Each structure stands twice: as C-alpha cells, then as structure tokens.
Length: 470
Image: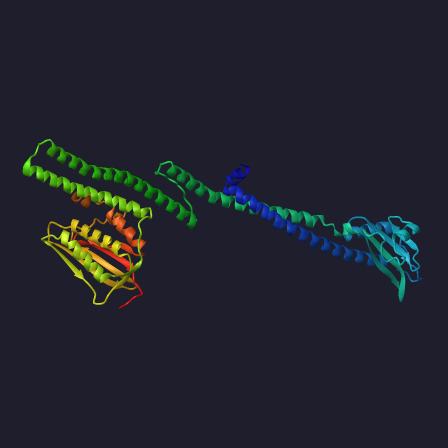
C-alpha cells in the first residue's frame, strides 16, 4: 500500500525543477564558498605577515643606536598605536623588543621577562603556542645585529577577513537568488501551456472536443505542441462526428436490405403477388440477400484484419500472370456490354513480394469501384497496367468515371467513409478501400490515389520487388 502511494505521488514541474535547481546551486556554490574561503584566508594571512614584517622593520629602524644597544624612544606606545592602525594590523598583537642577549627592553602590552621566555622558544624565533605566529626582525646597527623586534600575532587574526567574507556571501547569495528566480520564471512559463494542454486532454477524455487553449508563446517547440494538440482535438472532434454518422449509416445500410427482404417475402407468403410476379419478388429478395452478405463480409474482413487475425503470406508473386488471371475471372461475372477493359503488361516478368490472394482482393475491389464510378455520359473504360518503378512493383487501375471530389479525396481510405456521389449511386459500408489499404500495408506495400478528376480516377498499388529475376 505504501509503495503504491509513493509511486503515484506527483509534483508540478515548477516545484520539481526549482527545488532541484536550488539544491544544485547550493551544492555548487557551497564548493565555491569553501574554496574561496581557503584562498581568502591564505591571501589575508600572507598580506598581514608582509605588513607585520614592514612594521617590524620600521620599529627596528627607530630603536637602532650606535652604542651597541637598542634605544627605546619616548612616546613609544603612542607611536606604535598609530603604526598599528596604519598597517591595518587587526586582532591581538604583542610587540617585543630585546637586545642581543635576549633581554626584554620593551613590550606592548606589558610582558615580563619570565612570561616572554615561557611564551617563546629559546632562540626567541618562534612561539610555543601553536595558535600564534612570530614575525621577527633584527635590529641592525653598524655591521651586526644589536637586538630583535618580535611581533606575536594570533593565526586566526592573520586569516580573518570579514570584509571579503561579507562581499563573498553577498555575491553568492545574489547568484543563488538570481539563478533560482530565472529557473522559477522559466519553469512557470513552460508549465503554463503544459497545464493548459493537460486540461484540454482531460476535457477531450470527458467527451468535450471544443477545446480552446488560448496559449500565445514565442518558443517554437511549445508553439508546435499547442498547434499539434489543437489539430488533434479538431481531428478527434471530426472523427467523433464521422463515427456517429458512420454508425447511423452502417445501421441504415444493413437495415435497408433486411426490411426489403422481409417485405418481399411477406408479400409472397401472404399471396399479395402470385406466379411470375412472385418469382420476381423472390429474385429481388435473393439480390438483396447477396448485397447484405457482401456488407457483412466487408465488416467481418475489416474487423478481422484490424484485430490481426488475417494471415498475410509473404512470397514471390509474378504480377503479369496474376493480374491477367484476376482480370479474366472478374470479367466473367462483371462484363458490361458498353464497357471496355484493357490490360497493359510489360515485356519482362515482374516479381513482387506479397500474398497472391490478398493482391487479388485489392485488385478486385479496385475494379468493382471503377465499375461503380461509371459515367452515364460516356462508355466506360477501365485500364489495368503492371510495371516496375524504381525498386517497387506497380499495379495501376484507371477509369474514366465520375471521379472523386477534391474535398473527399483525403478521406476515401478512412473506415466507413463514403463520398456523396457514391452514397447516392450504390449502397455499402465504406470499408472496401480501407480494407484494401490495410492489406497493402500488411504486405509491405501501399495503396494510394494517384489522381482524380471529372474525367476519371487512377489508383496505384505499390509492392516490394523480389530479388528473383528471370
């Protein structure tokens, strides 16, 4: 239970990225702070040691004397106070002046000889306290040293640099705040259109397809996302309308022959018609039954292929012989007195990869459609051509029928779609071209409308060429 709750726990883009970005900033700048503090302390220590050395040298110059012994000038305390302020020596500092024998001559603040010996090493060069640093400067007079000036300073005071530290913290705080604010505004700008798209998706899921996102953005990717979503919403709305219309159309198309058959048979049964008229009614009922059977067959074939239960064999097929046989068989039962069917075949064999049975279904469906599209103003002509185009085998079916309206052409391969002209001329479910297109794709090919005009239409079936050549 706890694992499921944890898995489903979600957060917004704004919170997710800003929190992580702040964490990354803090870690990164934390490393910078540690490194900067180390460099600042080292630099401050070095500068203060140099300043202490200069101060020690100035004191040594002032106490030098010619009689071989350092002489402490009057008002030494006042003088040292001004020099300490000038050299910016902060913190606790102890100044010791000794002669060449190590005798303490002056100290600031006051320190006894014994305290000095306990505080310093025997050579008076270093402090015994590890927290202190001794800066020594010899007092030179003539050709030798007559004494020594020693400055004892706390190592913490040497490294202390409050001004630089404050400046560093202000700079880092400003950078962190600026970075966080930048990402916050960016995430907010990005999350707003995404939230609107998500809200639109929820509305579509609830069945509301009139979605107005009203998102204006200059970012190309977000603009493309919003535009694509709007197109998808419009497409879904159109498909839903088509679905409702198609369902009504399918119901009507299936109900019409059933009603007709029922009425015809009841008329024969009740004796409303007799003898030759009754036989005619029975013949009409048989025709309607055949039409109903074809509709149901189309619906079952489409559902079977959509569910993946239709087997498509991949084999080498010689298209010239196959198409010739298909056209011959079709003409036996569909030949019209005023119709001309021509077959154009290449001189060499055309080997394609596909399923002969499925190719026959596609070509027969194209021939049936061509026959149904016949124009009453001119004799019908159907032309079937087999050829090679690049690395593809091609079967072209052209007619001189009434053509397809340009507005309807993009939708003719959609399920249950039937153009206005075809709906008025023939009854059907609008699954023939959809089923044929799916069969073509299942064989690695493609069925497409090459051209259409009031003078006729041209459909092309493309299939992969086989490596076998005669």
